Image (cartoon, rainbow, N blue to C red; front, side, top):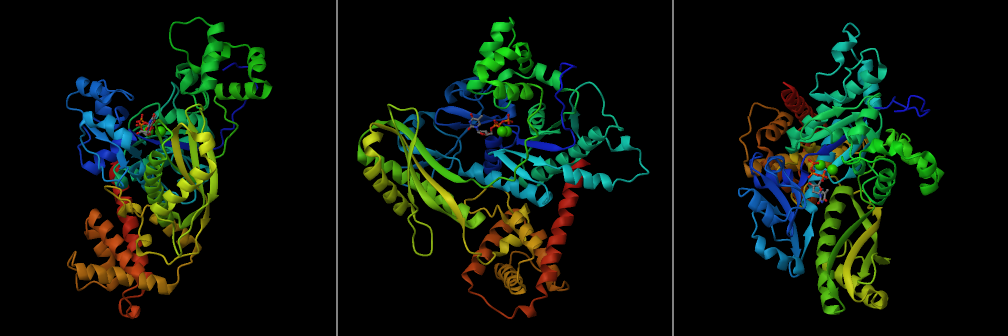
Length: 574
Ligand code: TTP
Ligand code: CA
Ligand code: CA
């Protein structure tokens, strides 16, 4: 960086960026129990959208055609994303696929990414359970930013003063970007090294509890943390400290910097080429060769200053905004141009099936319902979707079913869209404007952290359990009656199923803890779902005092879970 440059970074924060490695592939490895060293790719129709690292080593890349990939690596396992058909909802379960059938499938089916969204929610659960006080921003289906500044401050304040500061630096499986070692007398370096410690703890928890590896970047702003997480993939983390930005930007391909992937990147590349002549691909710091007057005349003074900030590794200290619930849900499909209302109606059936399923999951996870239904369409003479909105049709006491959604959407389309939509090449259904439902009774599953949620994310995965449990514990809004009834339902249910033999010498509260720690994780998941269902149906009531003091009981379960979690994290580092 130009030494005279007045830009100064605020390096007092500690920001993490965690990105899952070959995310869709890992979800499929786990779901289908395929060993991780087998080359595997996930395809959508004929193209690959995710490639695992063993397959990358064999020359397979994203966007390769499936057939070409098979020719390149004949033992490659190809898994197709879940699809929803015209006539039925979601029966295609993935697995090795017959490539020949796919082009015709595309005409009658749409891809559905729900299983990856649910896996993402599991990861968020784990993170919230580990660091309940830190803001976590979901940045995409497989990445988050986390501001751990306050946690670092707290952990630093607990540091043993008799130990030399240098002992705290590193040793946490991180890669330090740049040539200079960390400096124990630099407060920023010390803070970042604590951030690295927290990052590896979180990655360890994700691996232990969800069986996914991830990579992380640790720095003092979001921009640099994101660059860091991509630096040493897979399954590593990279610390970016002040003073290395110039070298970082001189390696980073121009189009890889956040915001430079699209049209802006294209324009900057063209400008760069006017001022430098190089045979190697352009990198971010090549932008420094563009005179600032030229940048200003092209983009205006404000945008030019923003671009230069980014190039210098500054992002205006963009905040990590707690964000994970979508504001709207979209199910959409592109198809060959048509003006046939029968075909349009069929696609609304498919889109409504997907939207219904997602609305149900969202209701379970966040206890909220959308109030607006949107229909979007695109005609083949346009490059943009247009949208018409209407109040969400409501069924008494619940959400609209797929048939109601489909017919409401079709009515909107017929009455308000046809004049502009034909010939139509794309349709979408949107649910938005979410409103929280009145508090419902808590299900028993919500008393247990996200360790219960593993293997094969099901549509009804209780992904939000850990987080909600924590929030509710913090709010302290569970009544003793609720605790008793829920604990009771679980004890009774496990007894009835005889999943394990309980130890008579144990107190009832220990027994519950015992049940949960001894039953294998898949059984726990099924058990908790079923017990929760039982509880919801409220078919069983008994005098709860005969079982145990329920708050002691739940606390005991929580402590046992906590201690086993600590153990597994410790194993990860040993
Ligand atoms: P990425 O994080 O970009 O990639 P990745 O997780 O597969 O691999 P890496 O280890 O390099 O991070 O995307 C996350 C998921 O999003 C990816 O698994 C599949 C999906 N995806 C698409 O469907 N289409 C795309 O063009 C991209 C980039 C991703
Ligand atoms: Ca990723
Ligand atoms: Ca990503």
